[in-house]
Amino acid sequence: MTRETLLNTLLMALLIGVPLWAWVADEPFTITLATRAVIFALAAVGLNIALGLGGLVSLGHAVYFGIGGYAMGILAYHAQTYTPLMAWPFVIEGTKFMPVIWLVAMVVSAVVAFVIGLLSLRTSGVYFIMITLAFGQMFYFFTISWPRYGGEDGLSIYVRNGFPGLNTLDPIQFFAICLALLCAVLWLNARIVKSPFGLALGAARQVPQRVETVGLDPFRLKLVALVISGTICGLAGALFADLNRFVSPTMFSWQMSGELIVFIILGGLGRVFGPVAGATLFVLLEHLLGGVSDYFLFYVGLLLLLVVLFTPGGIYGILLGRSKS
Amino acid sequence: MTAVLEVRGITRRFGALVANEDVTLDLRAGEIHAVIGPNGAGKSTLIAQICGGVTPDAGMIRFLGQDITGANTQARARMGLGRTFQISALAMENSVLDNALLGALGASGRVWRLWHPVLKDRALRERAEDALRRVQLIEFSDARVGDLSHGQRRQLEVAMALTLEPKAFILDEPMAGLSAEGTKELTGLLDTLRQEAPILLVEHDMDVVFALADRITVLDYGRVIATGTVDDIRRNPKVQSAYLGEEA
Image (cartoon, rainbow over all chains, first blue to last red; front, side, top):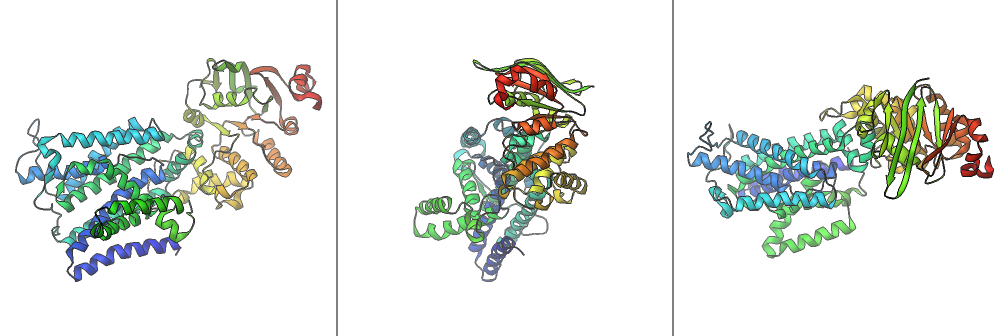
C-alpha cells in the first residue's frame, strides 16, 4: 500500500468513524456536520475533474451547485403545495422522490455546463475565469429577482425528500446516502484519471498543441470534462439543499464557487482524494473557529495563504512530500 | 515519383515581415527532403503552415492528393501527418509510456473511453511500446518525462510521431541538443524510417543533412533559393554565399 492509499484510507475511516461514533453517542449535530463535509467534498471532487485534471479554473461552479439546489427546491415545493410544476403542454408534477430529483439536478446541470462550456472554453486564462464568474453572477441575480420561488428569501422545504427503504430524516441514514454517492463519484473519478480520456485531458492541460498534433481536439476533451464536473456539482447541490431543507440564491454566489476552489487547494490539487481532505478540514475549521470568532474566515484565509506559499501540494503535499504529479 | 505532400506557392506575412514568399516544394514517397536555411529564414513558419496553426495568405498545400490548406491541425494529424516540435512539447508530469500512449490514442480513436484503464488496452500499449523500443527509450517507460534528459525528450518526440504511424513525417530539428552518440543513433533510425513514410526534415546539423537527405531545399529571407540533390546544393554558389559560407 502506498502512503497515498494509506492516507486516503485514514481519511475515509475518519469520515465514516466519527459519524458512527456520533450515532452511538446520540450526537446528531456531529452527524449533520459530517454530512455537510461529505456534500462539500462531493462538489469539490466534481470541480476537481475540471480544475485538477483539465486545468480549467472555473470560478462559476456554484452555478451547478445552485442548479442542483433549485432542482430539489422547485420539485419539492410543488410536491408540498400540491401544485403542478407545469400544466401546459403536458403536466409535470413536483416530486419528493430523491432519485428523480438527483436525475433532474444532474441532467439540467449537464446541459447548462455544456452551453457554458461551448461559450467559455473559447477563452483561456483570466478570461475563462471571468466568463465563468459572469455566468455564476447571472444565475445568482436571476434567482434573487425570481419571486415565484422565494427570490432573495429562498425556499423552505418542510420535510426531507424520501429514498426508498430509508428514513432520510434520520441523520445517520441521510449521511449514509451522501457518503455512498461520494464513494461512487470518487471511484468514477479514479477510473477517469486512469482512462484514455483522463490521459488525453491531462495532456490537453499541459501541452494542448501536442494533443492537437496527435489528432485529438482539446476543446472537446475540456468540454466533456466540464460537463462531467458540472453534473457532479449538480448532484451535490441537490443533496446540500436536502440537508438544509432550504435553498436560496447564496448557493449560486461566487463565494460558493470560491470555496469549492479553496477545498481543492487546501486538500491538494490534482489528487483524487485531495478535495475530500480540503472540504473536511474546512467544515472542521468552520465549526471549531466559528464558535470562537465571528471572523473565522479570516483564519481560513490565513491558512490558505500559508498553504499556497509554503506547501503547494495542500494537505496531501504536506503529508506525502512533493506532489507526484 | 508521386508527391505525398505538395506545397504550392505559399506566402505568409506577419505585418510588414514576409516570413514565407512563394514557397514551393514537394515531398515524394521514400525520400528524406531536408529544409535548411539560416535563422529567421522562415522554416518554422513553413512547418506551422504544413502542420496547421498558421494559415497561408496565398498558395496551397496538398497532402495525399487532398487540399489541406484550410484543414485544422487535428484533421491533418488524423490524415497521417506526424510531426515533432523544435522545442519538446510533452506532458512533463506524465510518464514516458503515457506520452507514447497519447500518440497512439489519437490514431486509435478510443479516447472517449472513460472507464477502461488506458494501460490495459493491449493494442494501444503494444503500439506505444513498439515506438519506444525503436527510439531506445523502452527501459525508461515508467520515468516521468520531467526527469528525462534533454536528449531523451528529443527521442520521445520522435517516438510520439512514430505511434501515429503517419503517411509523412515532419521533423522540426529533431537533433537539436543531442549528443554526438544520440545524433548518430537517431540518424540511423531516420535512415530506415524513410521506407515507411517520407520525411520532411528541418535541421541545422549539416553533417546530418548531407548524410540523410535525398533532396534539399534552401530557404533564405522566406524564399526558396535552391532545391536539388545534395551535390547540387553543395555546388550552388547562391547557397554558399547565403548559408554555408566557407564551410562548404
